[in-house]
Image (cartoon, rainbow, N blue to C red; front, side, top):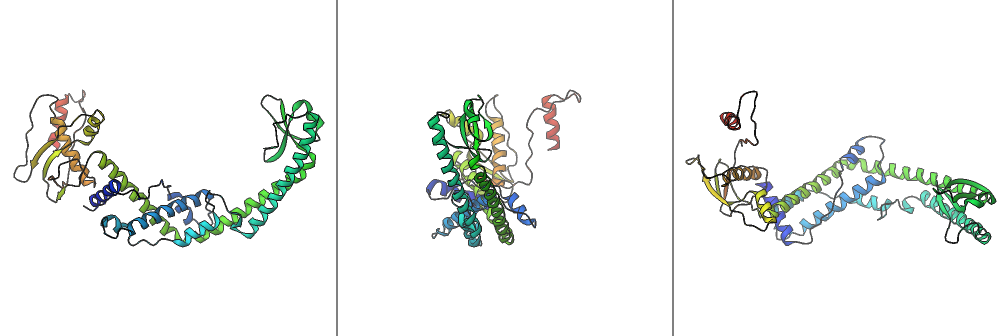
Length: 365
């Protein structure tokens, strides 16, 4: 009943609201496991995933808190005791930019390193452009080529015929062999300084990530709860979308094992005929404690098996908390066991025909 109510409310949201926050969400089990291990460190990718979970849960909490008329009590009940960890969201925002990179001001040391890195890269660019200008004047490089990066070093693409004219290190050449990538001797030291600063930058980023991981470690349970909430609501929405596609409703439920099905449609058959723009013929029947047996007869391809399968599938769907494609007056009871015999289990070894194998299963039923 609880599950059916949740799906029913989500169907109303899907049909009537356009401000429900829908977003993909990451599998957080790995990063939450990581937080349990002392000395482990979150990656930038992990931070992006945590921010996604926090953003999604914040939007969902806000959506249901705006439900002043209490139109969605079952879904609202799922989030009423949740406390949003604002500290974690603020902490991530202080370190991570909107495009998912570590901010310059994540620490004073990182800010200083990146400033020096920028200045060094500018110096190399100026030196290379100066050298490139002289080389172009000599016709050793085509006018449309400029400095590029090979193996993490800023180099000049020179026509291989003239590579001996340049004093420097050859790092690579093009597939055709016509272009050689040379690092002029004048910029080798500057490029070395850039590499050292890049190593410094990576070490500082690792330090920032480790400190952040230590801050997040006490909040692993809160993150897990939020992650489960986001995925549960996503599952409920998936059920709602399927229910809308098969024109399903929440039927009346009875604890006793009985069926009073009005204008029921087999969901898969309904979707198949819908594609062909045809109408499905619904089935109605009643089984209760007094009338426990229903005998179905008729010609081949008359719909006998479909009626049986419809009854079983609809009963099972309801017990999985899924709305079903039936008429509004339908009553579905709860069954302890649902027996199914699907497929051809004939056995030459045991001298069983198709019909005999069905009978063996029926005997067990």
